[in-house]
Image (cartoon, rainbow, N blue to C red; front, side, top):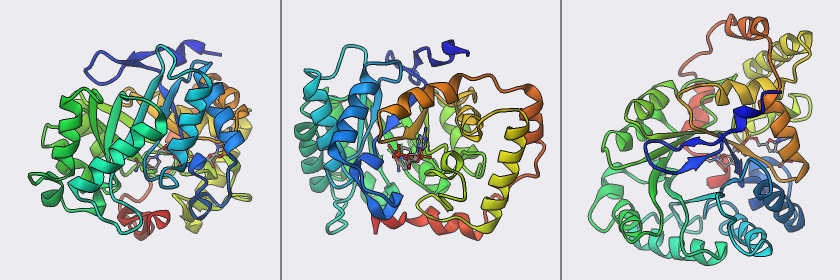
Length: 329
Ligand SMILES: NC(=O)c1ccc[n+]([C@@H]2O[C@H](COP(=O)([O-])OP(=O)(O)OC[C@H]3O[C@@H](n4cnc5c(N)ncnc54)[C@H](OP(=O)(O)O)[C@@H]3O)[C@@H](O)[C@H]2O)c1
């Protein structure tokens, strides 16, 4: 096992050092519509405690996940440990109010204040403009708008890194090109099944921004298998993706490699990606994730995976979840 693969590395061009994997806390928001199952507070808090005691001590949450439920649970996990342990990393995201979809500066301000309260901290490492496709670039960047509000929190020392976390490439690229953002999160678009985010990853990496790739399992299919989880990015997976998953698994099986390990390492071994965010809600997921990230995958296995025909770059299925995720409606 190559355990040095979990060594901390610089986060973008700042001084922060982070592990290459973060614990994604969307499932801990218990959003049954998105993931198809509920998560208990007990499991969520135990997962946070296990993560913070090990090498993957980087927590990614958002005000949107269960509209405060995920942050409340992260906060309980932190409180049980007497606060965020030395060297651990915490980030959250701010955007619209899911009750009325208001994405104004005022909404982002009160939700940021609520996040700090729920998390039980007075600062975090990074905050992202969340699901920026739910507002327009002009409104987000206007005086008094959400970006200015977040920038003010940053100037006051509430966090060090301002990031953007959107879906469609064109939205991500607009914010990246402002030069005002230190980090970017892409999701479900750089996996073994969909690589549409390549231009976003390239643009952010070339600028020295921190690049975070979320949902390497495409929300679950690449770890649970298409039989038990025939979904991609929180919706029913198209047939072509299910077929591709079966082909990928057949290749991995021949080399004795779990498909999930290839899914994780596809992202973690990419030199452009600083952090891979993996969603989980059980304490035993940490050890499983470490195994997936560190087992050796033979070159011949990668060669077979890489030899598969390219995936369509802009197919109708991709557009379907590019716009808005179902759990956010
Ligand atoms: N707009 C954005 O900024 C954005 C969008 C999407 C995601 N994200 C972030 O990125 C994270 C990752 O995305 P995601 O959670 O949607 O998808 P994901 O990481 O591709 O997959 C998460 C799913 O995989 C399951 N899983 C994880 N490890 C497993 C294991 N060892 N065995 C079996 N199942 C396993 C989890 O189940 P359990 O719950 O049972 O552990 C969960 O259902 C999110 O949680 C969130 O923090 C951000």
